[in-house]
Length: 150
Ligand SMILES: Nc1nc2c(ncn2[C@@H]2O[C@H](COP(=O)(O)OP(=O)(O)OP(=O)(O)O)[C@@H](O)[C@H]2O)c(=O)[nH]1
Ligand SMILES: [Mg+2]
Image 1: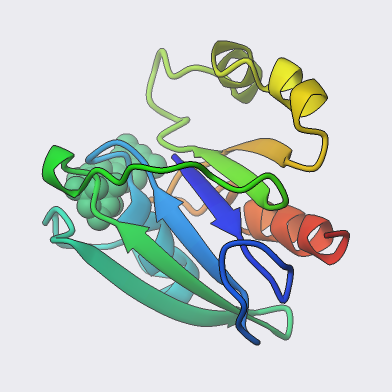
Image 2: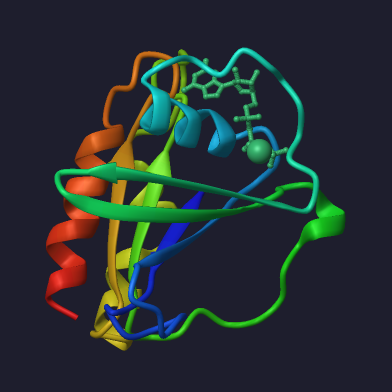
């Protein structure tokens, strides 16, 4: 699943607070990731997100506002991601036996060639587990560092 970070980091939104669009296949753990980041707790419900949902929280003195797009097919969004955004891919459920590594996923998505074609769009794949919290803050750290450069 991917997140794109907009400006002040110029890009998807022209707002004071950075907004992050969070999308991915259904059931990949988007709501679980946001809940864990916001509360430190494991999300106890197992309900697909209807339409979209928004979660805001602070991390390292920065405010994050995530807009989760429900992953079910009927909520599928069309359109292109602008070039000048930071794109973080959470490779979630990494503790599940047989899960692809971050390296395998970046190969599968052919991120290296994408970086050459649109040099402004910076990508990163972060392995994560929304149950233990592994990798979640590392993803935010990457966003903070890379958004500042845009
Ligand atoms: N094993 C494992 N299960 C996870 C992980 N993250 C989420 N889950 C489980 O995956 C299921 C779906 O999680 P959600 O967070 O609702 O997934 P979602 O991407 O928000 O789904 P939609 O809103 O339908 O797009 C739940 O049963 C979660 O407990 C993880 O890192 N590891
Ligand atoms: Mg959800």
